[in-house]
Each structure stands twice: as structure tokens, then as C-alpha cells.
Amino acid sequence: MLVEGTAVAVKILDPEMTGSCKSFLAECTAAKNIRHRNLVKLITTCSSLDFRNMDFLGLVYEYMSNGSLEDWLTGKRTANANGLNLLDRLNVMLDVASALVYLHNDCETPVVHCDIKPGNVLLDTDMTAKIGDFGLAWLSIERISKEGFISSTHGLKGSISYIPPEYGLGQKPSTAGDVYSFGIMLLEVFTGRSPTHESFVGLGLRLSQKISIKC
Image (cartoon, rainbow, N blue to C red; front, side):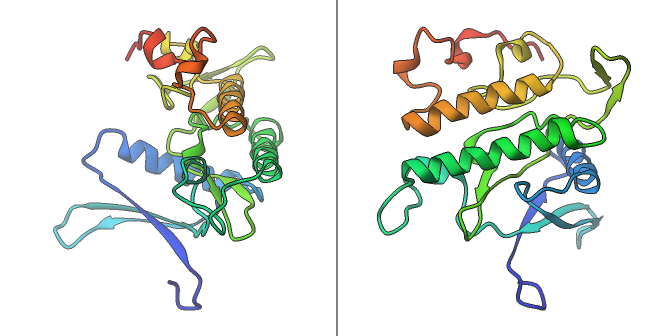
């Protein structure tokens, strides 16, 4: 809790883990460039040395009291023993869509989140959905032509069940990739089944079994 009584969520990154510093920088950069009602607000950051003289990386966010969309879809959270009804699910997905429109079209430079999934969609007290976790965001984008963008980032980005097949073949992140992930999540939200469910065999959604990942 802050001095004025505001609840916050604190994310501590392990600097010894591969990619943690890049993730920290990506989230810091995102905080400087994006503001939207459907994006989790990053309040402040901390980069210093701890009591062991080791690097300390911390991120302080607004507290999302109703947890993640994943929690609700899996039954870990309920309201009066009930899960999300159809209208709740529709409103959540409209909130996520609004955030993606902003990131892709209304920012000075398009931002690709790269990891759209229920676990990264958080719900506040009023059940307003907000996208969080910009640790994989593709922010170092340089406009080079009307046709596309270039970036110095490399490697697979995102969660296997939600990323488009072309990411597994080495193609660079794109706004279209976020839209694909949104579509997979949309299917999950309204069917109540994960992308790896056996009922989706033949639809090309079980990506973890169908693509070869090039690291």
C-alpha cells in the first residue's frame, strides 16, 4: 500500500534470468509512450542495487482487484459463485479490442504487444478489462516505407497457443499477429475451451503440435 492508501501491484524481475533486462526496458519504454483506459497503468519503476549488491528491477502497477481473465475462464475466480456471463465476456473483449486499436493505430509509432492472451488481460473493480505485461512488446520499430517496418529485435515472441504460425517460422512481429492472438482468445472466451482443446483439431489452432520453432 502507498502512503495515501492506494493498493498497487509490484512485479520484481530476476536480472539473472535471460531477457529480464530487455523485458524491463520494454515495459519502461511502453510506459513513456502509451496511455489508454484499457491498458494497465505503470505507476513507477525501480532500477538499483539490493542489500546483496545485486541488480534490482521492479515495476509498480495499478492494482487490478479482479485478477486476470484467465482466472475467470478457469474458475479460479467467481462472483457470487458465478463466472462471467455472455455480456461480461462481450464487454471484456470490446475493452481488449479498444486497447489494440489504440496500440496499432493511435500511437505515434505502432506498438505490437506480442503476447495477447487471457493471462495478460486484467480486470479492475468495475470489471473493466485492461491489457498488461508489455515485457515482450515490439517497441523498437522504425518506419522505413509505406509497406512495413524494421526492427533490431529477434527470436520468437509470445505464448505458443496464441501466436500466429508465421512467428514460429521466423517472421517478425506485426500488428496482424496481435489480431490473430485476439481471435484465438475470442474463440476461447466464447467457447470456454483453450486453444489446445481436442475439439479444435483440424482448425490449425493447436500450434504447439503443428509448428517448428526456430530460435
